[in-house]
Amino acid sequence: MTRTEVRLPENHRSAAMAREFTRETLTRWGHHSWQDAAQVVSELVSNVLLHAHGQPVLRLTDVGDGVRVEVADDSPQPPTVRRSGPGGLGMQLVERMSTAWGVSKRGRGKVVWCDLPAAPNPLTA
Image 1: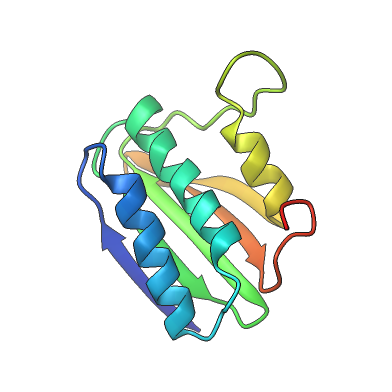
Image 2: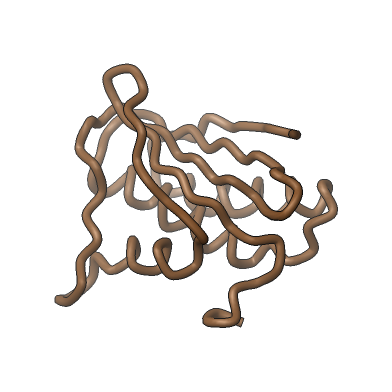
């Protein structure tokens, strides 16, 4: 297993930095379909900036048949999957694009993780 991580600043540039880090990393690992991962990473990092606190930490793990994405923050509050209403539907996107996702406690905060297949999700292609 190959793993890498980046600590992102707590500001508006973090989501874009996370997408670029994801694109570069997955391309280097030979995953040519990185767009789904970049979209999920952007959503998870944005959630930290909007709804949690602490410096987001993005970790990517190459699991052979896909990629595990983890985003850590200092808030113990888990994300909410909203089913309707204005805005706030990003966790639905994460849920649809991943084969599995969840939340794990880490220190005083949490890690939101998801597993993405190596091939793009046909719902988003």
